Image 1 (tube, one colour):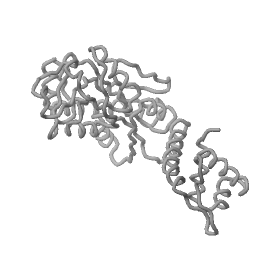
Image 2: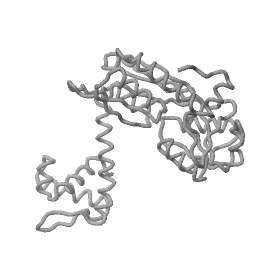
Image 3: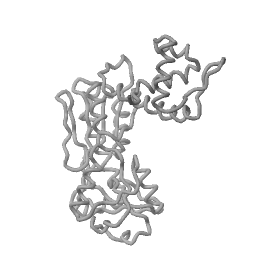
Image 4: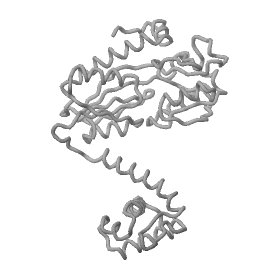
Length: 317
C-alpha cells in the first residue's frame, strides 16, 4: 500500500488537534478506527510518527519531518480542488485577477484601477497557463493574463474569450563581464557551452526552449531551475549562468540584456475572461490600456527600444 493524500490529512489533523480523541472527532471517526489508521500509516513509513502520553500526542523526529512535507502537499491539493471545481462568486466579492510573471501586469492593474475607480480586486500569480485558464473556466478568477511560449496554441473553451496584447522576442540576460556582453545581438549557437538558468514552470516553455536550442545545434545544459524572472536575474548577475528574459526587463548592476539574432523564440501575452463574467464588458478597454502601457514600457527599455526600431516594429502607446 502507498501513502495517499488522505493519509497525510490524518497525520496533519492529529498533529493539529494534539490528541487522537479530538482528531477522531474532527475526522468523523471513532478513536479506535483512527488509532488503527495511524498504525497502518506508521508501518508504511517505517517508524512512529507521534509520542503518546497522558497529555496527548506530539510528533517524533520522523513525524516532524513528514509533517513539514505533508502540510505542503495537503495545501497544494486543496488549492487544486479550489482551482478546478466550479465556483460561483459571492455578491460583492472583489474582482480576482490571475497572472504569469508578465511585464504587462502593472499596466493591466493600472487600467483596471482607472476604469473602475474604487472597486477592489485581488491578484494571484501562477506560472501555469493551464491552471490560469482552468480557473477562468471554473470561476476561480475573473480575468487572466497568460504568457504563451513559441507557436503553441492555447486551447480555449467556448465560454472563454481571449485577446493577444503583445508578442515579443525573448532576450538573453548575461553577466556584465561576459565576453559576449558588448555585442548588439547574440547568436544563440554562441551560448552552446553556457550554464542555463531556466524557469521550471510555464506549461511547455521549457520544451520550447530545448527545441529552440536543439535547432541551433546544441542541447542546453540547464544548471538552475527558477520560478520567475527576478530569481533568474539574481543568478545571472551573480555569474552563475545565462537565461532568457522578457525584453522589457531593465538592466541592473552586474547584468546586461541582449537580443538574440533572428528572434528564435517569441512569447505572447494573452488576456482571457469568461464571456458571462464580470470583466466581459470592460475587457476591450482593459486590453487597450494594458497594451498601451506595454509599449510605453518598451520605449523606456533601451535594448528593446533599439531592437524594435532596428526592425521597424516600435508601436506608439
